[in-house]
Image (cartoon, rainbow, N blue to C red; front, side):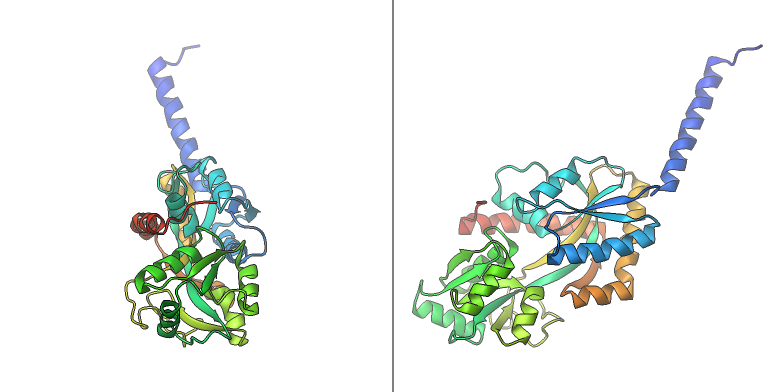
Length: 325
């Protein structure tokens, strides 16, 4: 029997390997995909992540399995995904806290907000809102600032934690207005809202989603939203800019990312599936009902947003001396 020449054998082996690789890439996804949510079950991000994950799985043809890995202000979940294989089977959906806030308040992180992830896209945004206790003699931002300046240090504002987007938005507002309010950090939105309603704090900064039932129920007063335009969910509440303080645009956004190094064709499939998911009217309606404004943006736009926000957040943290607990 004649032996196969070495060069011919190597060429055949390379072709076979290439064909196998191509077949594997073409078959993605060939098994369920893990979607990590770095928040506890039941919260707003968890509810939104599950809605998006379900439709994403429908578009990809494989189940998307949710795994909550909460802790350390999203650091636990983000680190897990950053170290996962870059094969498209482990994804992260998280807020701007992961990508622009944590790097601003932590000297060291077990992940890099830019170099540890491949962006897939932005799923949408949730505005932030300044709220007041019903008994506070201020019904708009100008009255709030005037009262704070008349009696510096008398009033306090709560947020859902030190170094959170609400804390950053509050400090940005204080810097712009020149008002002085004591920051009271809480371990989550719920206890902050409870104390605001009860009068233990005069003001708070919270998400629009958390504020809607309390504002509509007349339990708290809506002062202003910190976004560039009014929220579609609370269209009668003015923006900070409308109150005379332009330049403030603070909100919470959610993004989908994969570990750095995902194959280009796999990344393209994920981007396409996310775009289709966010265009689905039923999904959009459910997200709006949950207090989330779906506004898809591409992977390139997500990368640009992180690049833009990182230095801004670092400047706010340095100016207000915001550091991780």
